[in-house]
Image (tube, rainbow, N blue to C red; front, side, top):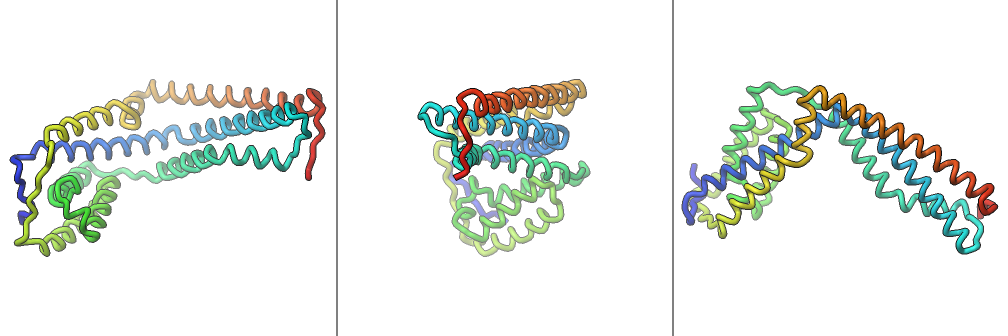
Length: 259
């Protein structure tokens, strides 16, 4: 079933680059999950300790502001001040913990299934990829199907993507006899932009996590680095607690207030 006619020549290279870009994005997501499965627990501990240190620094900063103003420290207001400043950090911690927990549920998929998913995705993408068929964005039904196809592709869900292929073809049947004439302006610029995007994906994290995960020595080195970071933050936390204690109790002799 031919749904789309192209008015500005052969765009097979454009199609291929779109599919390559999507494939590299998927690989990057997989490497991110595997990276978190390997290092996520330690990364979380390091980040928690980092947040503790930042929170202590904010508390010290509040005390310093109060001292500069010649005011007594209001404990409740200090807690509110620190909580507000730490909100973004705590949200980042929640995201990290969510991704870490999700990474532990990654299951192995056979190479045969991965290839079948890829093949099915390529067939569907050539029909309803938003960059190739403007009907997708304009049709709520096609748009929803495309989102589900993308999610199934990233999850290597063969059953889901093969079922979605049937639904896609059923929906496209309604357009038969009224083919879309697709014109892609500035095709050369779009090709160059896709090539640059692919290069960027392949040369940055999380795609580059693959090089660590494939090397046992680099994996061991990363564990050592994280362990050292945790020890350094733990030692720094002790120092900050002492600074805060000294600042409150001895430095300027500011009494605590609770109202």
